[in-house]
Length: 188
Image (cartoon, rainbow, N blue to C red; front, side, top):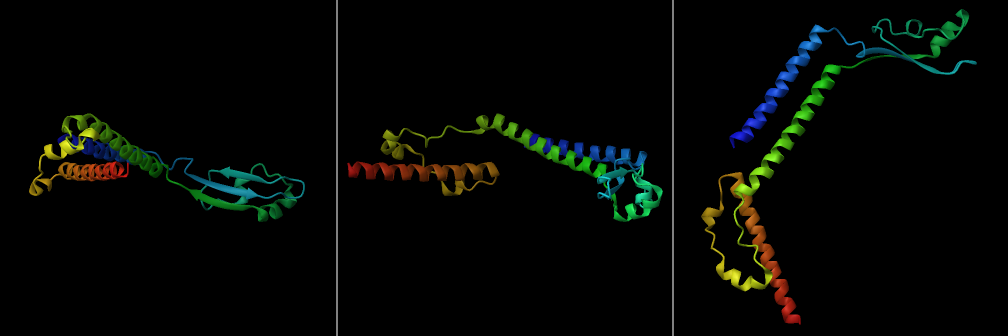
């Protein structure tokens, strides 16, 4: 149980350290040039085809006159051309994206480590199962099965509860098999 806690604590520590490093990196460096942009979508105008312009400008300078360079129309048509263009200021946080990806990868990594842990430990904790007897010895195995104390079946740990549920399921399967084979014998 301590190794499971060790895995989860190590993931938590990794995520916290990553958050501090990314936060510190974000503070030391001003807005990344890819985080803010002004995007102008200009439709076709006269004999000029439509075009999309992306430039790194502040929100107050996000207009056609600043973003569209070189201006595809002569000076007298600039105002008419700019009225057709739709300019939007877009901002994103690359630090938030990085943190989200790190958290996602940490969770997936922790689940993979937990799966490997269970694959390695499962053969060690699995007991020899007396319910998996050959089908032709069903009548004999019914008599040889140890009786399970109902008080003992209720385990306090998750593993004991899972084992109890698994044993009940196997018992039901054996009863169904016995019923099917008995009916088959009676029909033959």
